[in-house]
Image 1 (tube, rainbow, N blue to C red):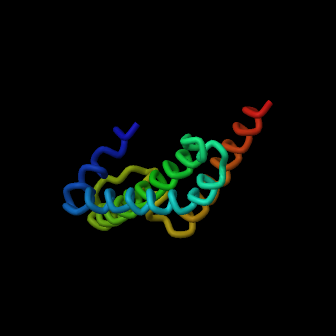
Image 2 (image 1 turned 60 degrees about the vertical axis):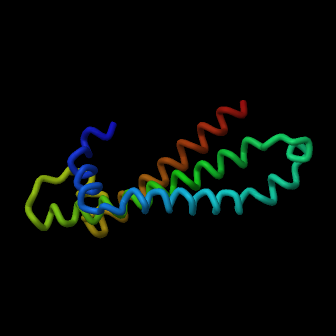
Length: 129
């Protein structure tokens, strides 16, 4: 999946030696935020009182970790993409559109979020039937 972004990802990790530390810090922040978000829910359920861990708490915590790590990676990729565009080097079209196109980037991100939310909602609703 990441083969098309290989050059940009390689450059992101080469250009910023601290990127691994930033990703680790983002994961820790996501973990803390996820625990804080689900702490009251986890403590108030009967399952937790009997020693079980609610699956929803684990999923929400995992999702916050994923979102925070992806945000840090996208910010690093944005820096690399911007530098490569300015230097006239080849840049993946998706990265250029999503990260370096001003208003077009904003519109693409909004459409992406809307589509993901709709797909998740429809998938969840179908799962209830």
